[in-house]
Amino acid sequence: MVTTRPLRRISWSFSTDGGHAACLATPGDGTWRVESWSLLPGRASGGLPVGTGAGERLHTQLLALPDGRVLVCRHEPGRHDIAILEADEAGSERLLTTVRLPGLRLIPYPGSDALAIALGADTTPSTTVWLVREDGRLDAVAELSGLYSGGVWLDPGGRRLAVDEVRGGRIKTVALDLDTATVRPFLELTDESNDRLLLCDPVGGLLVIASDAPGSDRLGWIRLPADRAQPPGQVRFPEVVHVPDAQIRPIAIAPDGRRVALQLDRGATSRLAVWAPEDGTMTEVATPEGCLGAVGRWTGPGLRIPFSAPDRPGCLARLDPDEPGSWRQDGEPGPFIGFDGADRPTWRPAHLELLVGGTGPVESIVYGGPDWRGAEHVLLALHGGPAAAWRFEFDPLLQRLASAGIAVVAPNQRGSTGYGARFARELHGAWGGPDLADITAIGRTLGAERAAFGLGPPALFGVSYGAYLALLAAAFAPNVWSRALAVAPFLSGPRLIAEASLPVRALMTRLGGEVEYADELGPRDVVAVCERIRVPLLFVHGDRDDTIPVGQSRTLRHTLLRHGRGEGTDFRYLELPGLGHEVLTGDGAPDLHARLTGFLQTGRV
Image 1 (cartoon, rainbow, N blue to C red):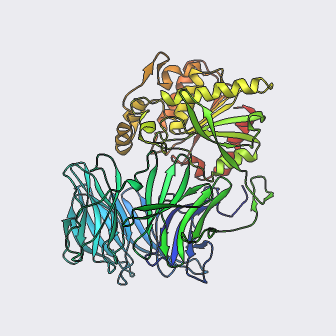
Image 2: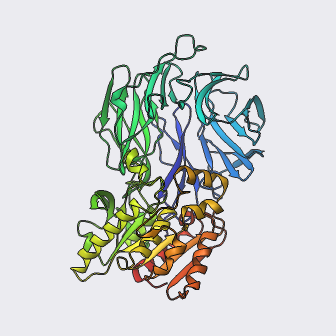
Image 3: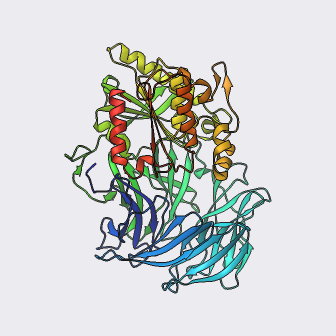
């Protein structure tokens, strides 16, 4: 790839006054840089690179400051470097301080006497709250017993901060008084409920909360009493914002303090709505088909929110929710340089289509136009997770494959998020069960349709959990596929849990991965069934993957060799030195993309 224009923008942050934003941006070559955006009337601009551009990591935390500078926190195991990036032509950068703790999080600070609040957690467990000063000093303002996260200001002066306390396996929002270094209960609807403050208008007092006290996770609201030192009263959970099979995310409170911008995620796309809690209304706002960024800022000139679509790299959209047709997309208009070095006024479009799964329709994102079934190459791309889904947004790898003439089908099979709790729960304790049935059904149907035109079967591609699912599909239905590509695969839920880090083990167990599903097909253990794979196979793993240990792929390689498979003829294993779980966005990503594309086109390992 030779483009230098950003193809992805993530980790958006808005300054406390709404005048600036910051994000991480990448041209898709594995490098990330920080951008600063001016949102001031008459001075609005696209993203301007700040700092040295030496290369950020995906997990770098950003805070946009009111003067256009960006505060960054770069995380290493047990170490966190806080630096300030200047918004000047020299791209200067200044290291403020280094904190040596297991965890550190920055919170925007509305006062003028400090840059940010920092929450530092150790293994005791306890949490230290600091003010981050301009000169690099960290002034401790509170020492709290336990683990605290989040951070929503309850007053405009930056003296009372709502934070989430982990207590007895539950999450409760408490109020931290920075002047007295004490915390008091703030949201505690029942002893057994999880109660979290999501948004607050410190001036008008409108609070937006999420709680499972009503029996399921619901969105609610309340206003702070006139005496702000008192806890809020009765929370209301209106039915108008209880939308079945949709995830609702509060984005921003309007300047009038009476309305809330909501992002509604249903299926692969996002919608925007405006909720007026006291009026009991929710009104949808017209936006292009695509995905919103789950954060935003609403000021006098309007609402700013990240946006992306399959043929639109990430940008910052702006609109006045009260004015139809006011939607605008800021960024870098005009042609992009494509993967082959040619100017491209547009990227490859995609559409949504319902395909027939094991028991019903499966929403899928499809690149390749209306005649995609007749393309020379068709690929089923399986998302990671399992608690994840393909989103209707720009994806550099899928665009590369589509630009190479490969029709890409990205299904959200059973177990994917965005289709309601029941749909997502189908995989709990059943990894490789309902989802494998959906993928196999789609593959069989496509194969039969293509055979009628003298075309070959579709190919398989998966990342992480999707790689595990692709290996199972290639083993249990070897005649359905032409080839299989697996990036950072694991071999079974129990095998991954036995080898992974403690946080990954906890997540996998919570998702039901400790149970090895089995039915008439047999156990869903790749080691037990990989000898059945007969199609050309390429699998890739970074040797520093701290999510799925590289030992999973090494075991797969040894097992294939033990069964008599030839490396270089039947399969190929690529182990990438120095790379972690995100190999598709790390160093050398363009070369890796090109190699994967070549394999999917030719099947040569």
